Image (cartoon, rainbow, N blue to C red; front, side, top):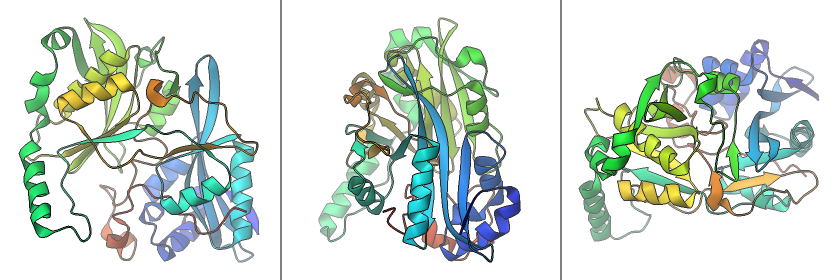
Length: 364
């Protein structure tokens, strides 16, 4: 059993293992090589057998956060799969030795059963908000209720631009957005009001959210207040769906409205309604989103942080946090726009895996 760091030379061995597990993401070379190779932040660790087959894998994205006056590096875990408990435990220890704080944002219930056994710390209050969301019936729900919910959801659907009038006139007079093609230092906020936030460098942003990637369409917007830069918004512009991937700014009120104005701009040419998804725990920003028409979707999105020596020291009140959906690989899900259906057998079986990072074995 050997632990190695993924390089493009390992792709065929990885693809065979991923195809067996129906992991369409890891069968797509443009995504794998960009996300897990050729950058200093995100690595995929493989456990190889004596025959050089992949028997376990785990990705770690080292992300820079700021909590008050402290800078912290948290390792986002992704694609953790292991056929044997020994390999799972080896990868788990490597994760938290490589990056003393690990975190999972989203993930399956199976994942979180394991994290709770490992005494990870959970931070409640991070909510998912949706706009123009289709209504999915619950199992066993009466037919009349299914139709009533569909009708109510349809009645609420409206082009994003049609909601622009809900942004106060005084805000629209002073706040505007401008689409950019490259990340520059002046986009980064000089100060920020959030007690905990992701604070990547320009180099990280230019790698992770770069406009022009073949497997994702990221769009970058500069937020302006009376002509001066006050932050940025990154949207993940998908067919049928728009994700608020990442944003940051010097003022929560302005930032939330910058997000809304970016969505109006990005969907202006749409010929059909698209669902919009974002996450937020900040109380003021939540109220602004709700006035615009966003509705909470489901329970709080799990946000868990762990270390080899729990508990972890982070601000417990998430109402002051800035949290965005497309961290780690959350917004990078198959099928990608440039991914052929023949790349992995039974691709339909993995289309619903929007946020799971399956754990095949216990890390004990």
